[in-house]
Image (tube, rainbow, N blue to C red; front, side, top):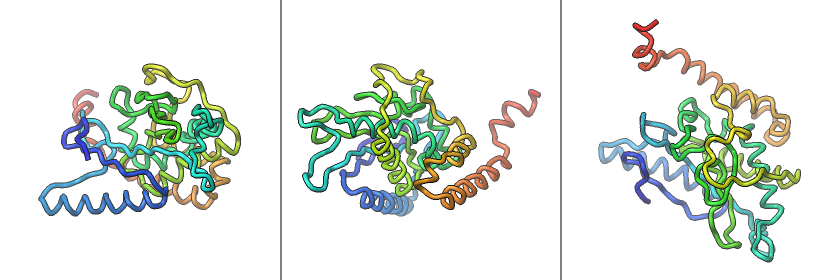
Length: 251
């Protein structure tokens, strides 16, 4: 546990392991943290953007794939270079994260995190040791090669977010999708691989993706999108203080 950039914002790192086990750990941790905070008369939140002018909170996912027979990381070649499967995995993340964004950013508030110069991504570009893009490849030894998906917010369901992130990479490997060229330097202004800007746009992208429907099933897509649209309709019924402050006597 270390202090992050935001006021009272802490970073928690979980040791790498089996995907389902990690999702269990995240769920238990969040519930335990909330209960512990209440006992000290404070509140713990996992909102993606709880405070104006402060950094948002994410659930960065570092993913690699180990051959169950050899125990080797399939993202590295024998000579230590990036394997073709690794590049295909990154390519899959780039192509399908925008179509699964509602699983990484499930709430209206989630999208307030995606702003330039706030340590949050605004696209699905990738780069080595680059925190200005959505997909970072950390500087690591070949056996530890991995890609960090920086899109999921702290408010995301860990089971759905982890499954969705691995699915994107899996499709990339199955279909042999090549990634774009890695970004060197600042990546916020890159517009070719931008994300949907609102939850409405993201839900429409997910709903219309035949590839995602193939893997997740039509019933899941219909149900999930319906729930999130209903939540968004409720949100639109509430008039915010910003609207009153800037419009009440100005229009």
